[in-house]
Length: 258
Ligand SMILES: C[S@@+](CC[C@H](N)C(=O)[O-])C[C@H]1O[C@@H](n2cnc3c(N)ncnc32)[C@H](O)[C@@H]1O
Image 1 (cartoon, rainbow, N blue to C red):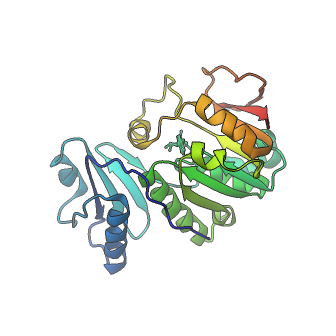
Image 2 (cartoon, protein in one colour):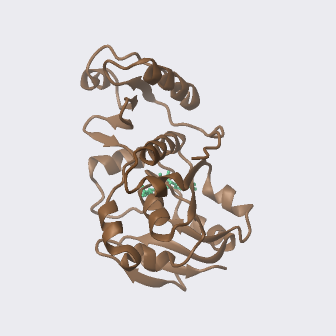
């Protein structure tokens, strides 16, 4: 997978640190140093279990590198990039609501990449090359490492993972300079909706950019040649001019390019 270098973005630091799993090899330790430099977080050698290492700090957050995967960990919560409901994507194919909403597309920009599950599913459902924009440097780093791992696994999701390129950038700026550059722009911003108080979601919220949909929609409509697709919690109203594609748990708003 082509992986452009991540540009300098502001990383939230506080009491965050980078460490490895217990009994890490030279490869993990060297990767931990590289991630620590990239994020501007201290590298903490792993001398004890993660729980006491986290308990030593107020409001702790660890980027943990192991041979099998990378993860962002806080007490009781962990974020990592995985295939998600990939079996559902394979089972439904063109009948998947995300496939119906995105439609035919050779190129897609996911302007709110997060943990890259939706980007991976869109790459599989459409066959498109997907550029994933993520404004949080720790999340962009995590997603890039996770997608590279998924692409190497020789698993059903590997070809799709290899088609997702991560760019650490603010989508408002990146999209604003690219007129009609891509078939479809996909957005899944941090909506404030009830029922999203799971520990993982709170950790995501701590790291994520809180850009409201209104600040992304117009630049997205200008950057898209065909349409903008927004993942829409049921409680959120449909944006003006949008049509709704119903999913099982969430809907998708489809908005024509502007
Ligand atoms: C709800 S999550 C997306 C989850 C994602 N769809 C997935 O499948 O994992 C929203 C993500 O968008 C990112 N984000 C919000 N505003 C952004 C912006 N202006 N530029 C880039 N990323 C942004 C947040 O940092 C967060 O990681």
